Length: 157
Image (tube, rainbow, N blue to C red; front, side, top):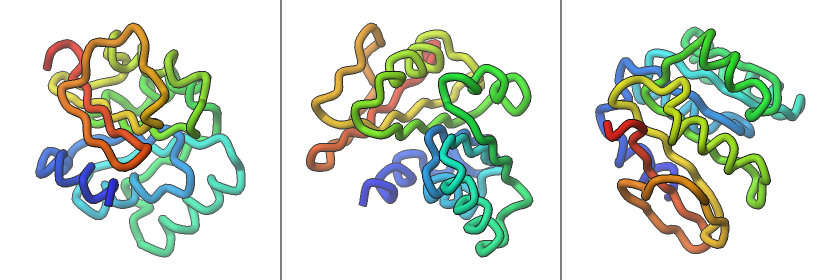
């Protein structure tokens, strides 16, 4: 339900655009972006088992052509990923709940607009009890039980 709401909110803005899936897990969100017409998706995931699952899922869906899979910690590799593959029209971050790095990553993409294309959007999925300190107010939020999708437009896009 949350993934459907995410893509309904992004609407046609995904078609032909660059998408970054931070903390990608098994790649479900990024693969959905590719299936909805994203030009390319960069998956960032540190767990080697999840990286393998992303690669297998891309092969099974025949969507590998528009995908780049980067193994590494999102906070540590995002600068390089943004420089090599950005700017991104959508940056989606779904870290494990309670992830201490979320604030650092969020500040870089939301406040600084690092790696975000003009008019781009940053979407952060988080636990409803996890605060995002020192960030501007999201332009909208969607609540799903104990989870929240927060939508930001860096640079007042």
